Amino acid sequence: MTFEMFFSVAMPITAFVIGACVGSFLNVVIYRVPLGLSVNEPKRSFCPNCKTQIPAWLNIPLFTWLMLRGKCKWCHTPISVRYFIVELLTALLFLAAWKAFFPADAGADSDPLYLFRGFGVVLSIWILLALLVSATFIDFDHFIIPDSITIGGLVVGLIASVSLPELHAEKSHLHGLWMGVVGAAAGFGLLWAVVNLGKLAFGRIKFAFDEPTDWSVSQPVPEENPVIKIGDEEMAWEDVFYRPSDRLVLEGTEVTLNGETREAKMITIQGETINIDGEEHSLENVKSISGKCVRATVPREAMGFGDVKFIAMIGAFLGWVAVLFTVFAASIIGAIVGLLQKLVAREEWSRPLPFGPYLALGAILWIFMGEAFLHWYLQLVGFGAGGGSGL
Image (cartoon, rainbow, N blue to C red; front, side):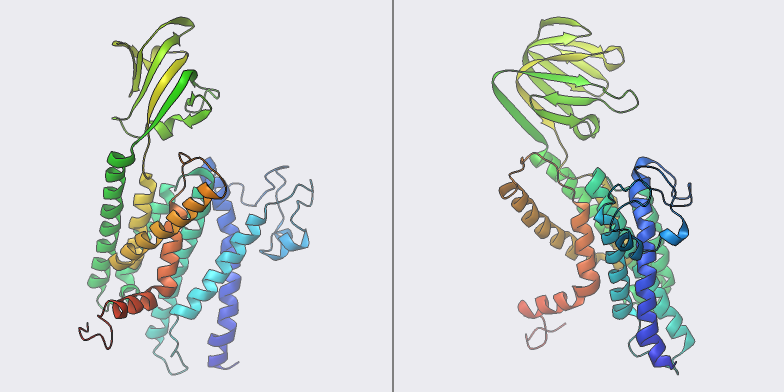
């Protein structure tokens, strides 16, 4: 096999296979990490229904799902097509990254260090893509992006930036690190500002009822956080009380506290206390509380802090320009998808939508189309070739 054939045929096939195998591992990460399970124990994948561990010969990425027609071999429970999608998506992204980032002019007479750095850049992009895919599907399922992905990815991104300044089109290791740090800081600062400004502008949901409506705070599962119900709306405690200043205010007619019912006009829940018409009670002493309300003001977040750390991670790998593009693209895509969900699917406007997947999609668009888009945009505004201003 010639050198050119090895890099033009054998390595792309290898990239696809590696991507499929990584995608198989990402399925483990997506399922286990949000549940607090180890990705190493048990070492083998298992059926979520019957818990039977899957032997190696039945754990071949892409092929096994097709061979078993999307069902467990033992209990015949359907296995979500998403497992196949994650493996195929990761394989295609790894193949595309190889095509886009391994030097096209690599040849038999190329400097070994040049080839090594080319491999390093591809590997760094592969790691970022794997983080983006896993974060996307975890956020879809649980509305969280684990710190093991965001903070761990941030550290890896900074290490990649200083080791391979080519990630940022730099030659100096110090400049590469600087671009990674600036990218992470820009991402963190930008979305941190969005979170806080969004809290001021959209930080409350108000309910008004024609008749006194039931509300309650209960803890169906002792090990988990309480659940808040107001009329037909049900909210997790952590979604309502995100920060110490958050207050749930209920204008009511009565309240039942620890089994005792009495009249109440204003109930405020904040921090570790419940205030009923000026009388404070510690949450520790409250076994049950419910009542009837005519109005309610519920705090909410415009965006989760996990998204802030997520864009910082993206910036560490790709730099500050990529951060601006990613946030802009994610906002446009998210707005379009959210509008379609509300108008076509008739979903409630108060229903939260995960923003992490849109950030991931924006970053992927930058990775593969960013330079072309930037060149097109600069030409559009008169800064490109022939525009007279030039860069």
